[in-house]
Length: 210
Length: 291
Image (cartoon, rainbow over the protein chains, first blue to last red):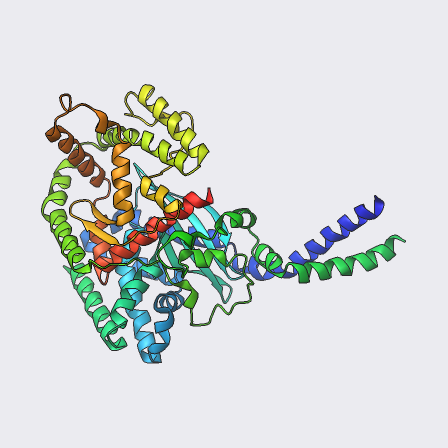
């Protein structure tokens, strides 16, 4: 009986020691859920700011949102995961341009969509770890007649948690774009995909200036 | 004696901890998240059993919880992350239907909804509650068929409470006063749970994206809707169509701008919609299996 007690104690001490060894690395980066919540709060702040509401302040608001999304998202990781096997079919120059174009497209449209729930409450529920360096942050947007579950997938790189995928109602952003890009790349060269993106981004840029 | 035991037992335990459960120790301890460990069993259910192709989608990432974690994450080849797919043999006609629905939205539904949205939100919420309450019996039965007994019981309770206390479902008293949450369940999902595949993708005029399975599901849900059993003399066809239209418009009034931003974000809206449909439905089936 006494041996059992000692064993138990040593086991706990051992476990704590193990924990102590791994803890500081991740503790330094903070909790993923806090990181995402922090960014989300900042975005809501911008969206709710009355001085940024008028049409004339649209560009300023956009710039502010872009600055936040730059910190919030890992666009390179997001691009890689979206193109998956096709990523290596792009040369480094094309890869770089793709990341930039995709960033603009998402910044202008998708981010706007996710975060357009301005007057609804957003609740951050929990974290679910996927791998050592990837975690899912689960949140719920309380709309008037429905609750929309939004999951942020974040990755730890250089001590910072950044979003590499957003899953709304089970629909993963990267999976959704991957399907679209795959259809284009199945019978056209990467250059043609970039051209499509350039047009798309150019159009939405124009649209926003109107 | 004591120190000796510690000296022997401690390294052994440490060793066993490292060797026996490397995955467990690194996933649960490297990320100091209490909920992480609790949630993982649920997400380990292989959810792609009943979907179109074997390659895993969002489930793949979730299933990685139990996999060894020493995968090179920075590696460019995210080959295991293929999303679910669906056969689309009628793509040409589906694309036409998609276009038709697109026009219907911009020409009819949107302007009508914009005008309708002048009705104060509180009233629209009441309508939304009434329509939702009518679907509770269907949800209860589907939950039951899916062996989600708690969900079935909750939906039954919700229907009773909201019909009586909420006066015909005008308020969600079950949620607000009793804390009983809605548990979505539909017949397409029930079929999916029991291994039925989508078959193929279908876009219906007005109704939108669906599949062979979910079309059958929709028909099934129709028979679980109370209004289906109201006698024709009491509710004419015109009236029941009118009700459906109102329900649709009322519903749309809460999501104004959603379709526009979806379209703006998409490279190919047709493919984007189809993929969103498959991913969303896959999640529904997974949820059912995980419960």
